[in-house]
Structures are given as structure tokens and as C-alpha cells.
Length: 105
Image 1 (cartoon, one colour):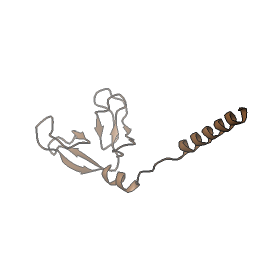
Image 2: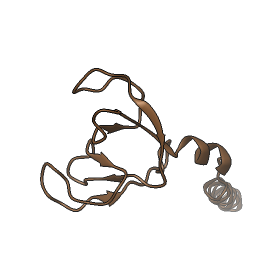
Image 3: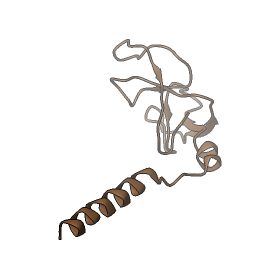
């Protein structure tokens, strides 16, 4: 009976460690092509978002813009810029936005 319990623990431990090390990998090409675009207003270039829509200032449709990097405030994640600088709300330095899902700009 003790041998059976020991074998059961060894089997469960081996199975658990194997399932933790196997990871599903996403294809890099899909995330790279979708991740390099933001939407901005032609009249208000300070308005930047990761989704299409209308400009909150003038109501014009936002246009797609290709960027290399996107910068955001750690305190105000809604503040985004395509250039490094300071947050207009709190004055903190903007940091490069890194995301594991859809946006790596």
C-alpha cells in the first residue's frame, strides 16, 4: 500500500511538472503586424488611441497611423504618445508601453 501511494505521488509530480513547462507559443508575425498601428485625429495629433473611432474633441473619424513605439504614463494609462516626453496630467516621464496581448507599439 505504501509503494502504491509513493508511486502515485511520483506520477502526479512528474505529470504536474511536465504540464507547467509546456507552453503554447503564438506566432510572432501575427502580433507584430497588428501591433504597430494606432489611431489618431488629423486635426488633433495629440489624440491617440489603440482602437478606431471618433475624435473626442472634434468628432472626426480617427485615421490609422503606423508607429515604432508608443509611450504612456504609468499613473494615467489613457495618456499615449508616439514620442517620449512628459504626461500632460501629472508631469511624470512617459515610458514605453509593453503589452502581452495586442499592442506592442
